[in-house]
Length: 348
Image 1 (cartoon, one colour):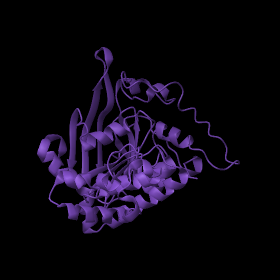
Image 2 (tube, rainbow, N blue to C red):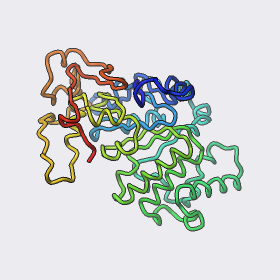
Image 3 (cartoon, rainbow, N blue to C red):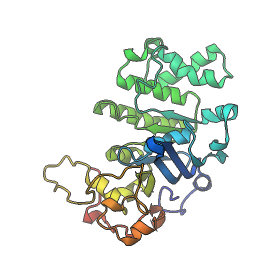
Image 4 (cartoon, rainbow, N blue to C red):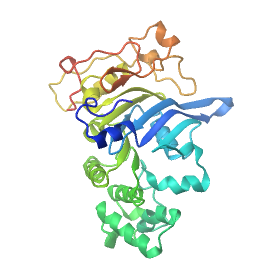
């Protein structure tokens, strides 16, 4: 997969090693669920992605496109139908029971609903310490000390909040507790499933700044799932665009926002409101009709039923991800040629 930046020139030996040896590698991941009348929900269909050390990869797409299913498959809750999820070369799909439990501390998840992800019958401090208790190796005093350290690191006063229940915390405080719980095992990878979507705008900014600071302090890699493209642009190094279970474009932030190559990516960017009354309303006409059902996705390109550039080949042959520019991949037979002066997204 393409990396961050403009090629290999100028990389240090350490950066080159990280580039060629990703922390997380997903290979041909498939997630399917049984439905009524013997049908199958095709949630994720053959997704391959890399995330390097200290990198934040954004994952965007419409609701129901499979983003959360992909995140949970990475976490093995539940395991994918097929494919590989490798953390530093270790295939998580081949680990079960105690062996999987032993490596869980290396990858943790921040959930979309911060309040419901905490046990309502436990004190907040106990919920944060739960991963340490599950992994073992620390006594009660050591767990309590680590918990208080993590609470302080995420801006929660342990003197005030350790013994409280989740319902006694605000949404932002609950999300800080969730972040502390994810960090307490000192993981290498954080999977963030829309971590700010349920929060007020002012609180969103606080949590995003916290995540950015944590990434710098702990040297983490992150998969950041969101539907807010402006948020993704501000926090991520690269962006992967997902439509109906497949990845249609992957590029560094600046490249993707300035020169989107897939018609669906351009439609998403055109839909972002600009806080400028003088800015002309977009008229892309890219998304007519309803999004197809994952129970019966279209043959070939899954976006073709809504794409004005579709041709016969789009229904016959599925386009695979291919390089169209340095580190910029797109799965489209007829990619766009969009330059900033011709309407590239400016992030305003």
